[in-house]
Image (cartoon, rainbow, N blue to C red; front, side, top):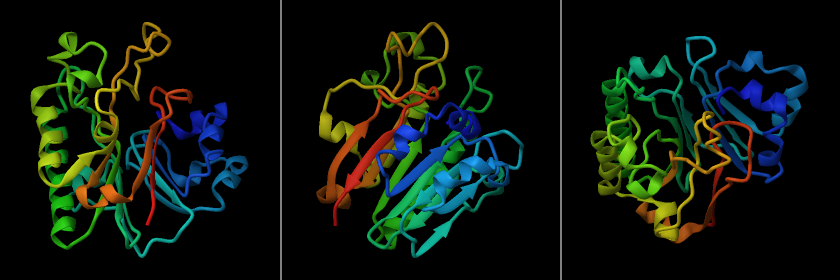
Length: 248
């Protein structure tokens, strides 16, 4: 979102809500639920709401809205260093567990790189535990790494930039080695689409972007996938929405 209040004030979320999502996952909301303006609350009244805001004001945070009530939910990764930044919500729908995640940015100077890699490790541990318990998982959100050269416009120029470092990309490999599928790449092969564009140099107008937002699904869910979509025609933040349709 790069700030939910800012996106709401632009009316940019209306296009997403017009798609009538049964579940809506937001990242980088940068607010607490009590800061939601009264005239905006009505947009979400028909959803069960799950908010996980960062302790630091105006920073990070995720929210999940679901038209169905899950059988269980969790807001904790079991590690305070991550929980204080509000980066994780897990909803158990029985058929699958949906994890809404906002992976930390490693920063251009790489000052947060070790924190980011530790976050990946903790997240994979949670997913491995769910798989061990026989659960199927949909992991979605801002993964903050472009996996392959095809997933960003200028891979050569960004080889030493956080978001495309070998050690970051290797973590996506690890998720795929542990029973996950990048469903967009699985369905569309070499198609090129991006989900994030810097605000500088008219990057979005020129489509100089990165694919940073993913649905990683347990391989056992593949037969239930109808479609996945990158809504790169919806503006409102530096990211665009992505969608996934499953049938059971």
